[in-house]
Structures are given as C-alpha cells and as structure tokens.
Length: 340
Image (cartoon, rainbow, N blue to C red; front, side, top):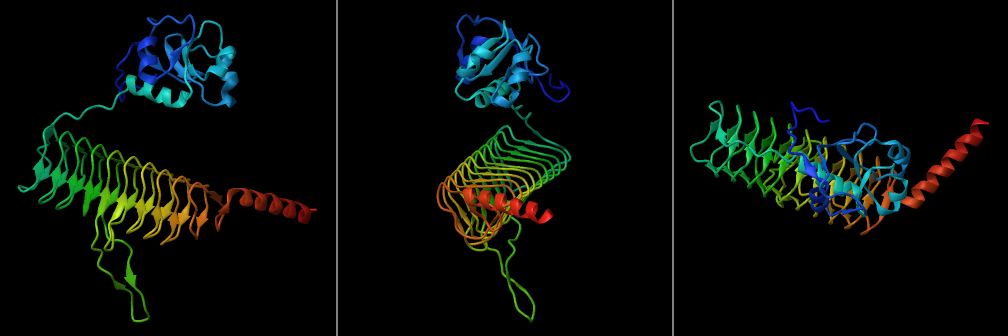
C-alpha cells in the first residue's frame, strides 16, 4: 500500500464504481458491490486490492497473483486465477490510471499566502490561490484561481499563471504566459535568455532575446528542465504536451499538441514539432528542423534533418528505424567476424 504519510487514500470503492470510472466492463458473475480498498502491483496485491495487467511478460505474476480484482484485456480472462474479479478493458493501463486517480486524487491546495512569501502590490491573485513560504510574485504578475505556488518559486514581472496550475518548489518563471492546469515540477527554469550570439573573431555579441514562452493548457514539465524564451518569435508548447525531467527546449521552438519528450533530451532553437511527436530519452535535435506530426524518435538519436509525419527514426545521424536496425545488425556481425 502507498505510504499514508505522503498519499491520502480516498477509498474504498465498489467494483461497480471503479468499472464506471475507468470505462471497463465487469466480467460475467462479478458482484458489482464488492469493495476494494487500494491499488497494488500484481506480485504484492491482496484480496482487498485491485491490480492490472497490460504486458504479457507479466503473465506468470498474473497467474499467481492474490489480487482480489484485476484490470485486463478480455483475451487474458481465461488465464486469471480462480476467484479473481476481472474488469475487462481494451486499454488496461489507461483504465488503471483512472482507478489509481480515484484512490489517490491530486490534493487541492489550501488557499492562503504564507507570511514568509513576497507578493508585489501590483500583482493580481485569483480566488483560492496558495503561495508557500519563500514564494516571490513580481510586479504585474497574475496568478489564476486555485493555483499553487511552491516554496521559493519565483514568478517574474508580468508573468501570467493560469487557473489550477501547480508551480513546484524552486521554480523560476519569467517572460511567460501559462494556460490552465499546467504542472511545473521543482527546479524548472522558464523564460530565461535563449542562447543567441552574433559570433565572430572580435567576440560573441549577445543578441537580445525579445520573445516569450507560451505554454498552453494541460502541459507538464518535469524537474530541472529548462525552456528558453524566444529571440523574437515566441517559444510555444501546445496543449497536452508532457516533458520529462532534465530536458532543454531552445529559443523559438514550437512543440505541437500532445507531444512527449523523455529525460535528457534537447531541442535546438527554431525547430518545429508537429502534434503527438514522441522524443525518447537522450535525443538531440539540431535547430531549424521540422518534425512532422506523429513522428517517433528512438532513444539516443541525433536528428540532423527533417522528419516526415508519422516516420520512425533512430541512430546518429537519425535514419528510418528499419534502416538503423539493419545498420546495427551489420555492425555487430562485422565486429564479431573481426574478433575471430
């Protein structure tokens, strides 16, 4: 079970309630009124807990699980242990996420401004805002209703933070406008100068960075990531995009809707990503490229040219994924022959 020092359990729930919440169908013969008290992994779940199976690699754990209930695909129902109540879903992981959110909902902030926070007289605070100790709200900043500003976070002059945003501890935001329900994890820096210089033998002359960072609704940015403001055009992160920890977004980058960018990856300036692009861990993308909607970039790739919509690429320099896999096989064979 989750440690109740950190996580508040909102259960129990009946199986009928959970099936309705997560869009699953109870298997034949399952009692809607049976109650479960928590979520748990297959290996450790007990008779009063619910788990899920989304990967056939864990079929053995499923077959031996003591979980009272499990969310699975219909095709796996015949492999369930006797007595386990089944919730049938075409997407068990998503259904599990909805169930887990029912048991452990995001806590609403308790409104109030800490006596140890600093709020400029010209700043505007919406109803129900919370500002923790050490928080700084600069001149002309606007904080939307029910937003939560964490300890030692700095919201710079003129910044707009939308309703229901969560700004983690030690975050620094300047030159930015945030939409609703944006979640910024601790240590993130947003709106600092982009890396722009007129370079030459007489020295590298800083180019003024005169754009903003525009973050649309429902974006999440992981711990210690950085988003540079635009040089003239804005840096834009569109609705629903999810960015992992330790990611760098350069100036003038445009990220479309629903993109996913995994840890230790980076995008150089003025590159445009379409909608629902997936960038895996430790990927580097050079500047001024266009990555088409639905493209997928494999981990540790170096992207040096445009990627077509829907394409899957990998390697450094990145090439179509099937070609990269062939390269890897041939290289392995050559190395093996040489070793002989």
